[in-house]
Length: 165
Length: 88
Image (cartoon, rainbow over all chains, first blue to last red; front, side, top):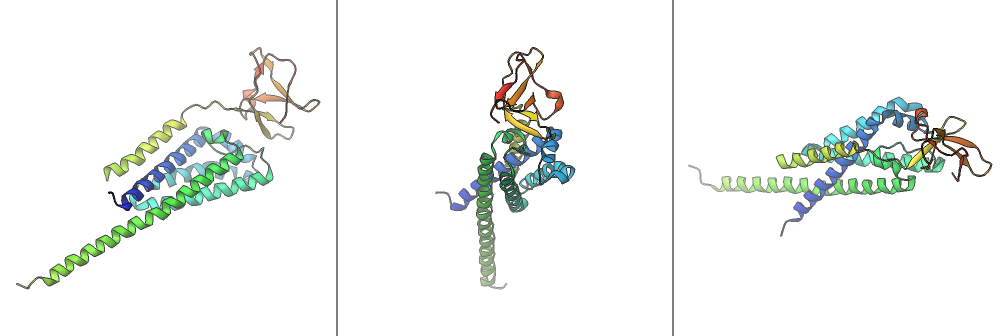
């Protein structure tokens, strides 16, 4: 029977892969149709004043966060960054829903065909995934560190127990 | 280590490939009088007989030219002289 840490590791890998797919897909879709994305942002009552900054900033941020998942030491940072990003996007959706549902979704690719409510549920799902990834990631590292510490202690005790020659 | 790096790379390649897949947009657009774009459900304008495809928001409501994208160069054309009445 595989130890629990193996299943956690696999789950974290799946979550990270899902975020890589989501973030890179969204970023590349936005960059491919940059003019349309810029137009959508201009229509937003909240973001219209920062069109140029957001039109490039969001895809770049998405790409940078997705790159964090490529490096094992930076995966936790990536998970936290993805969590924060999804919370920001979800907050924006909630604010937009209060203003008007006829504002076009400033998102890329097939996600743009979702309604605002569907998009909200979609984002909430990924927030939960990011949170799960963060929660499952830390114990794995702690187990490895504790395991290494115990192993070093055992070696040290063995060394100290050996008679001096 | 190499396997762990391979999975993210494959995921990235998959995502980039997906983003180049053309999507048939299920939405059309009209430009309102204030210049803003309003998405509407995709309109079937009929055969392309170079007649400008227009919609009317309800009976007696305002009439707008239908566009495929939020771009004035993507005006849809069809075979109907009268505007198509829709409920926005």
